[in-house]
Image (cartoon, rainbow, N blue to C red; front, side):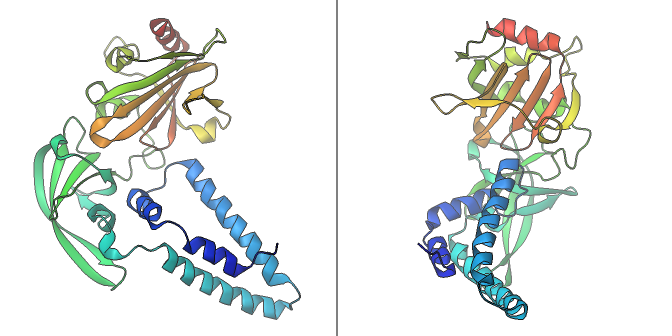
Length: 313
């Protein structure tokens, strides 16, 4: 059956606006951290481009093709924009006000947070945004708070005038922008010992038999990673997808991921309603993914990895 450009755009227009809004609130204007998301978008663009290309090039001169291509692209851009834009009034406040600056740090919206986790009120600000329907500036009063046990240099909360609350993080808090990232930064900025609990732990090291652990105490687990001075002394080695593109991840029947030949720790930070994962290999590599961000690689040494496995067993 022949597919036309009209068929493609009809399919796009039938997308459920509920899911579109979810994507908008969680990702619009926010730095895209996860490499799979980026490549999925590239693949999707490639499919549409290929389909459009086949239809355009059938039986036309170069001049006709160029003119038709430009017109088709403009129409596609306009139709896609109309199809995917939710009415402005239906956006949550943190989706409308995606960024703000405080103490010379730019923070970006990451999601909702419960008021019970707010700590100290830092200031009241007037935030500004642009209504894309009217192309006019809009403002709102917003109270800026720190979040309990989280570093305010990285994480802040905003209470909007409609009563909604959202958390924001420093958009530079990533390996692309912060080349001196340490394991101490990751653990202490979120106070993982206080804020996180382990959902599950998988051990696939050495024995060839996958073992799952529940009710694992994250504070005791983290103690195993400390040196004699109480620090998480590890060598930061950058983005795992650049240095280790062949991380061998498998999935269980419960759709839970684990690293082959190593130890997987999945944890949850309730106040941010966000998950993180740590993968340990037998040779001492540690891969940390915090809140769907980049997977960062650290060298903690084989001795610590062995100590962790012995403790789990």
